[in-house]
Image (cartoon, rainbow, N blue to C red; front, side, top):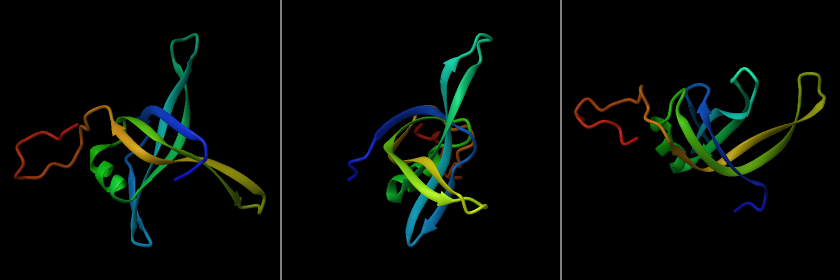
Amino acid sequence: MSNGAKVSLTGRLTKDPQQKNWQGTTVVSFTVAVNTTKKEDDKYIADFYNVSIWGKSGEFIFPRVAKGSLVQVYGDLILQPYKDKNNVEQKSLSVRATDVLPLSPVANAKKDENDDDPPPF
């Protein structure tokens, strides 16, 4: 359990999630665009957050979200140092999610050929 900064975000996936395996554990990652302020022309300015969710939670959410899906993300803010291509120390801010809740149906969710019911979200 982390004692760091907790975050709750509501936004849309900017592209389909990616699923990988790291040392035997599933990791699902995606980027969420969160509208922040409305400009005078009625368009929003968005902030973008890289999100990862690990293990069974990631396996569960992977088929239930896609590009454009509206999601609620709960998790921990992670500030991680790295060196860029010029060997300059930088920092990256991301979210390590503990929960991701789909808030909209997934239009392109994979459907079992024998399943006549729509996806649960």
